[in-house]
Image (cartoon, rainbow, N blue to C red; front, side, top):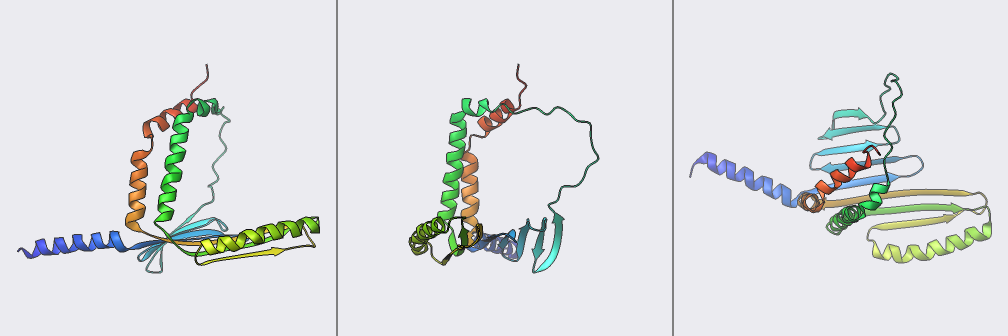
Length: 211
């Protein structure tokens, strides 16, 4: 057999193995000080940091690209009348909207089923002007947290009452991993199931001039 043919077949085999067995890692942190997330696959990572309005791409832990999420200031333009969307169209095309929503949530559900939860952290501090109400809310939320922790593996849920001041502080940290092939398959399946032509027609009708 030709040597070049063997090399090509070997490369194809390696690519298929990467698609089937490599994982995508997703990490998200949301709290009062940090709002950021990153997506990692093999040796590359893409991150979004909404706290400092920055984004970037790293490869082999080296900075490859950096960008800003801040909107660039443009010179002022003459005020133009913007077309107001006719939201009645959404109700008239409710069948399309319901089908789109069902497809989206079904695809997200399938992706989560194929994913593995690596870490889930919920840190919640609650305080109301009425200490009695704070105690009631704390008791109710605490009773819900125990069964939730038993359902979610690698999860930590902490709830703290604040009887002195009014405060609602939350910290959420989520780490997921899924196979690249599973994510690719769910996206392709959702693309074919979505009523694409009907959605485009609804968007056009939404901004169409009223007579």
